[in-house]
Image (tube, rainbow, N blue to C red; front, side, top):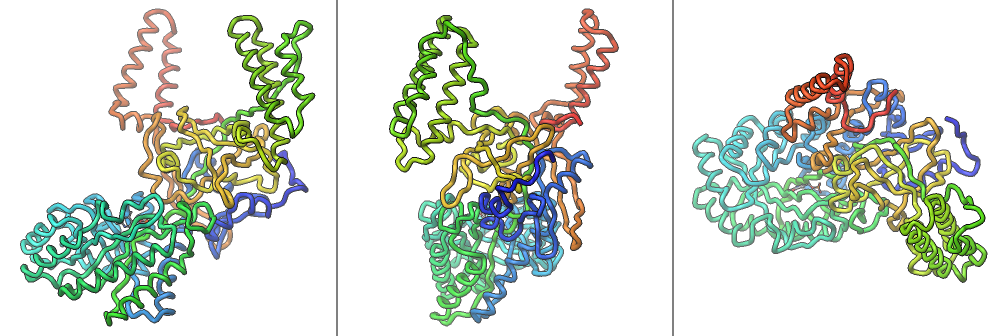
Length: 635
Ligand SMILES: *Cc1c(COP(=O)(O)O)cnc(C)c1O
């Protein structure tokens, strides 16, 4: 470290600036050395120590770090929050959680959930044949729930029926009327009685990005008429006693507790009337929707939520109890399918900064005696710059810069003159910005001046691979440096990734209360890496990522913290090699090597290179093919 602790800045200011106590759910803090720590009640580790451990193992940046203990703690919190709410409210049924595999399908994650969840019989929700196959292999605890959503063909149904026979409580949730005859037929053929659920189309409209999951035009769930058809067919087949579960999913990331409550009330209506129809319902499955407060603003905004986990559980349990008690209906088992809230906290994307661009004057030099008049005019703006005339100065600066650029185009001024002008222009804009920041009323045109002068920090990662929702749905994740937090961050920056795609940038950051368009960061220190962390990325980011520019999967490590401040790398997965990503788009690495060798051989024949050089080139090529797709610094 060549920068020491600065007296004008303390850790508390960093905590406040980056908001980590607002969004961290208690899982992140700062060490005395100014580093971000991941922590649970018993243990804590500086993320920089993990980076160091990775460097020693030749696991380079970018990397995804999973903290097992956080996943464990979240599953524990979810289950205990429901049991406590049940106790408090005097609810007669119990809670059974399931984790929807689609939220993060990585084997490590599913395996950890199955293992940490076993003590609660936490089950899995599946929506396809690959997912049920994964669930059947991973779950160990008999009696665990498997909830099968999605379209189910005969093979899917056979797997589910066999799961029942093996001792899992595997429910087929009917989403379309066409799947019921298949279930009836296969259960007769295999002699296994099915557990059946129905998914009701919900009218409760929720806000947020996923609001089309509910409502009349939702593609999910059965209408009132279809529900009656299902009941009638089951009755006719003498299987109505198999209909034991009602499924209602309103959407993901529901920001408002009021909407959740009204969804529960609607679910109770379906539950009550299906019972009246003779169904043997015992389970009410409220789906996902428990939100993550990505911005930390604790409000009903799209990327936040206006409730805590405890409030969610209590409101759900209480609403169920009240609504069902009015009808004298026995309390069912409550099932929820929380995905996002279960896995978001445990993964962190880490990357280093490769380079920065500053939009600042570097040299205000002169061009000598015959300086063009336009340049003199530009230089003169500073003389009349004051708050009352900022707009005028801004206009003049643009005008004279434009004039100089035109002269340059026509060959009337040289490159050096233009450089002086560009530098003067930036100097004036920075001076204007300094004035504007203290002004109460800012001219509209100058409102975005700060953003247009912000630095660009180039991060060693691909937005499309590692943070697809930032690109696709404008998702915001908390982003901050993971070290140097005892220093004042003196720069304002936007972040660009290394895909060279103009969409590969982050220019919206969480802020309190409003999002901001720049992120405060530290100046890079010569010869020292600067690391940023993107937090709460455990849900939905990993498998949606794509191979834009052929940047592949990042390195991944799973870390387990122990109680005495240490940690261990329990799993490590090396990211895609260049050969891997090329083979995903059907290049054959062997074939590529052969073709390159032929090219090199031809160069030898033509006398361009020697045979020895040829060998060197082939070695470089082959080593590269086995290397990481991201930027690697020679060490
Ligand atoms: C996606 C999905 C979930 C998960 O929702 P979260 O908001 O991530 O908890 C649960 N159930 C169903 C049916 C889903 O489609």
